[in-house]
Structure formats: C-alpha cells, structure tokens
Length: 84
Image (tube, rainbow, N blue to C red; front, side, top):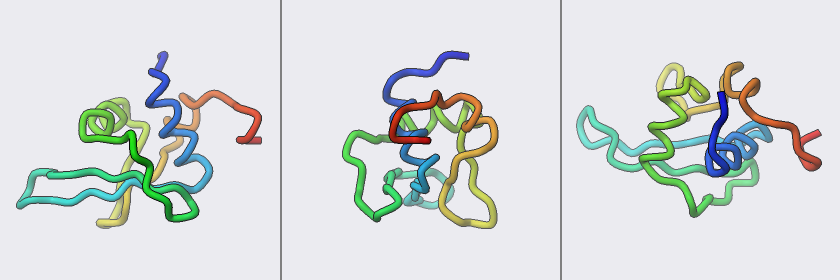
C-alpha cells in the first residue's frame, strides 16, 4: 500500500521517537498535534492526516498514552538516509 508524502514524513518522525497527542472535546477528537523526539511541534499536521494514519493502522494508542507508530506503520515507512 502506498502512502502520501505527508504521511511518510509523519511516520519518519514517529519512527525516530516522535508522538501524536490528541485534545478531546468530550468523546470526539478536537485537535491532534505531532511532536518530534526532541519535543518540537511539527507544524504541517492536522486532523485529516491523523485520521488517514489511524485508518491505515499505522498509529495506535494504548492506555490513554500518546499515539505511537505500530508495526504496520514501520512496514509502511520507507528507509531514508537519516533513519538508519
């Protein structure tokens, strides 16, 4: 399955130790933010991209913790020079 360039970037950030934190309004997700492993906020990330990654089962959350990359996500991400 091919993934878009934006999805690829987010999965690379997460493979290197990044995380996605969600802000909820009741039961629905109001906002999603992607953080790098250094704690920097990634600017080009929104709810639409979050839903695409979740639909493809590339990210998952357990026990109320931030979303992390799954084994499926690691298979989808292609190797790059900085991700050895």
